[in-house]
Length: 204
Image (cartoon, rainbow, N blue to C red; front, side):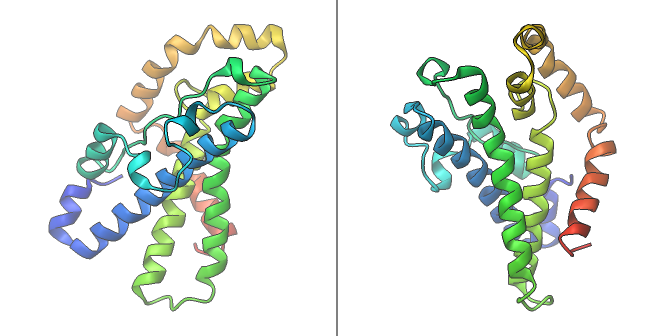
C-alpha cells in the first residue's frame, strides 16, 4: 500500500477519504471481536469499553501513526479471557473470526448501497475505498499466523491433538508475518483475492 503521508500532499481529499475508510474498517473489526466475546460470556472487553462503535475505543496509537505514514496499520487488540468461555477452544475461534466476517458483511452492504449512488460523486468514492479496505483487513487477518485472527481460527477447528501441535508454532508467527510484510509477499495472494472479491461485488 502507498504511504498516506505522501498522499496528503498530492490529494488531500483522497487522503481524508482513505483515513476515514480505514478508521471505519478497523473500528468495525475490533467491535465485532468485543461484541461476540461478550455474547459468549466473557465481559473483559465490555468492562474495558470495547463494545463500542466509537473509533477512539479501538485505535492503537502506534498502529494509527503507521496508518498515516506507511499506509498499513492496526487497531488495539481486543482482550478476552478464555476461562470465562463455555468452550474456550471453539469460542476463541468464533471471537477471532468475527472480525474478518464483520468486514466482509460491511463490504457486501456497502456494495449494495453503491448501486444507488452516483458513481462520480465523493460518497461513492468513500464507499468504494471502504469496501476495498474492509476486504483487505478481512482477508489479511485470516492469514493463519499469530497474532492474526486466522491463527486462532485454525486452532479452533483442528482436533485437540493437532490443535496442541499447531499452538506450538505460535511463537514463530510474528517473525514469519514480519518477513512476509517486509518483502511484500502477502500481496502475491491477497491482491488476486481482492480483485476477485471486488469483481463479485460488481466493483471491478
